[in-house]
Image: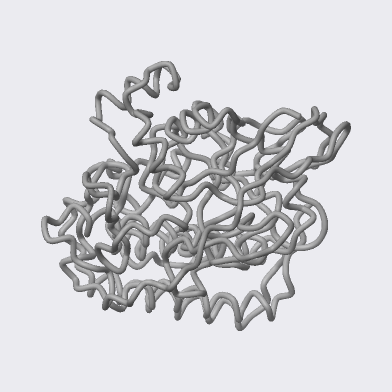
Amino acid sequence: MNTVATFDTLVRQYAGVRAQSLALCATLEAEDMVIQSMPGASPAKWHLAHTTWFFEQFLLGRDPQYQPYNRDWAYLFNSYYQSIGPMHARGQRGLLSRPTVAEILRYREAVDEHMQALLDGEVDITAQALLQLGLNHEQQHQELLLTDIKHALWTHPLHPAFRPTRPPAATAAALPLHFLPGAEGLAEIGWQGQGFAFDNETPRHKTWLAPHALANRLVTNGEYLEFIKAGGYRQPTLWLAEGWDAVRAGNWKHPLYWEDGLDAEYTLDGMQMLNPVLPVCHISYFEADAYARWAEARLPTEAEWEVLASGHPVRGNFVESGALHPQAAPTETSAVQLYGDVWEWTASPYVNYPGYKPLAGAVGEYNGKFMASQLVLRGGSCATPQDHLRPSYRNFFYPADRWQFMGLRLGRDA
């Protein structure tokens, strides 16, 4: 079972996580925070409201005497918890001009006041576990807030920056690419030990690893550019059938935020010249798979990735660095960039582990019901909080998704 952090730690984390969500919006105007640029993304103000609703619903709502801030808002800010009640259509969140940003900020303040009163009293172990889940849930939405606003600002014809533009970091030549032999035979994956983990990371179980090798670093912009110039987006034999359909339907010619001239890409610092040594990002599973096939390699499985990553500390380029963009690989002889920079596509479908059981109650809808038609990504990104990650962390998206910080590491059979 998950181990709940000490209560004092959770109380400190609550204040820090809630403050961080607001800090991420510091450079945004109210007009920025209402935009929904595609059905799969959400306005910034919705993220602020939904994460607040989560604490109100699952913690404050345990008290039958608690009166919700506004009962009608449960319909607006419930995301997908069908067992709780109906919700506003996800693709229409950008049409909600009311409540205003100012009203949502007052909502956050009110719920935080009630939460503080709750935390000042006796809090049972069930509530502590829900609090820990809620904090990790809000950290997930902090990353989504950044990636969603990036997409929204990119759709603006002038491509405004998320924040005052900072000069790009100077980089040297790319770290040479080589392959590291992976572990073979019977291995164990899945969460173990102390601390928090989502239910989809459990139970820990045995799996078999065939002989394989994984690249020491992520694929770079420069390497992906070679794939494009070699006609990668014009060769159907490199693509899965559904991927080739996506290429043609979307007229894909390059990663999501690259300019057609292949010399610049949109970042949260605005438009920047394309740096060939930085990791390629904002590519779909289909693009990652096609590139790997072109490179005479393949994508790693999530088991191969986790066994390698388990031998390395969780360090890298996370949201705390302030870069908000992938950075060049450090010069080391072992595997690098396992954590941070970009979420790494794997070849593994997002399915349950043997013996998996979702959490009881409505929070059981958090992960398990999405175990169909999606692929697993590992490692976190430049928009992920460092303390949110661990080797067993499983992210998941549909194979055509590209707006997250998604990239790839090559694997191959040995």
